[in-house]
Image 1 (tube, helix red, strand yellow):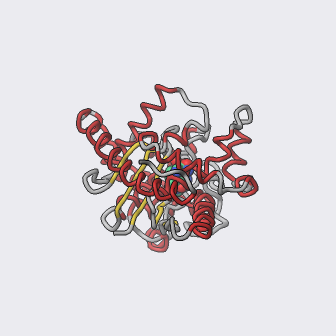
Image 2 (cartoon, helix red, strand yellow):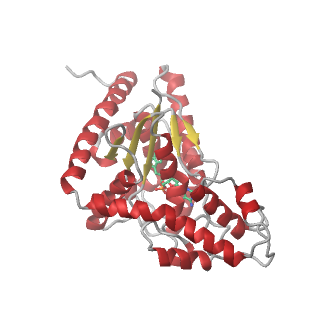
Image 3 (cartoon, rainbow, N blue to C red):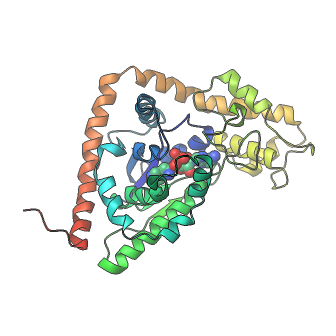
Amino acid sequence: KKVLFSGMQATGNLTLGNYLGALKNWVSLSDEYECFYSVVDMHSITVRQDPATLRKRARALLTLYLAAGIDPEKNCIYYQSHVSGHAELAWILNCFTYMGELNRMTQFKDKSAKHADNINAGLFTYPVLMAADILLFQADVVPVGIDQMQHLEITRDIAQRFNNIYGEVFTVPEAYIGKVGAKIMSLQEPTKKMSKSDENPNASIYLMDDADTILRKCKRAVTDSEGAIRYREEQPGVRNLIDIYSACTGKTPEETVGEFEGKGYGVFKEAVGEAVVSVLRPLQEEVRRLEKDKTYLDEIIKNNGEKAGYFANKTLRKVQKKVGFPERI
Ligand code: TYM
């Protein structure tokens, strides 16, 4: 079976973008691949975190993976920090990554502008840790939203560079980008991506928002004065709503446009809101049910963490040997 790896940060409140761009595809691909889904808490501390909040959010995120429908018996759902191989491989890969490559990363530029008081070395080498995540499991495919493409490219570059020196050690991974929903935009500034760190709460739909909030945010979404529901660049607000509706209902953008032809924005926005509610409500109910089952969650965390560690060590030992570390006796 081919291997799939993906992860999400336990930082901030997850948005509809995280769900439609990533998590939803994780579920649909999980039968086809041997899957590893990580809560990447080590990436989270590149920005200052309150320890108790981080711990709570990491657990909430793991619960969300389960609630979305990922079967923990068939797939591996675990905390990145529980598998020390991530850090060990990241160190080795740091020595095969150039400063110039990391300097080009747009996420680093954005984040260092935003957190100017804390431009730490971890923030700079963040993509190397991400490469280690993926390469540690010899992943063939990595389902992500469009914003992670640049990190995936550098992962491929690092893997190829390493393989050129030492032989075929790493599988060179491919990104999997969904057909719709790979870049959900802000509801208030539709030329900007929907982001959990947006300061305007109306810009994002959070996965745990209640129905009234979701309907209200959709109703207030910024559109334009064209008055026609068309899928084109000149109407980024409307296009984003078409993407959201299509991703939530499984329709293509063309089908959605056909369905609302001649209708007003008000009617359309209401339908978008309802489509989102019908996707998120069962997810929220499942999160609430799972949250109560402490022993069940703890068991998954323990078993899956060990399983991930076992796979990770296989790659790590191979890499350590290749670079010339003395063998263990
Ligand atoms: P993160 O935590 O920012 O986002 C998690 C996933 O959600 C996707 N996403 C979106 N998709 C569509 N529209 C949006 N507005 C939107 N916002 C976020 C992201 O593309 C991502 O797939 N560096 C990663 C986490 C990571 C990782 C990995 C991912 C660490 N190691 C290894 C894959 C493989 C990140 O910060 O994603």
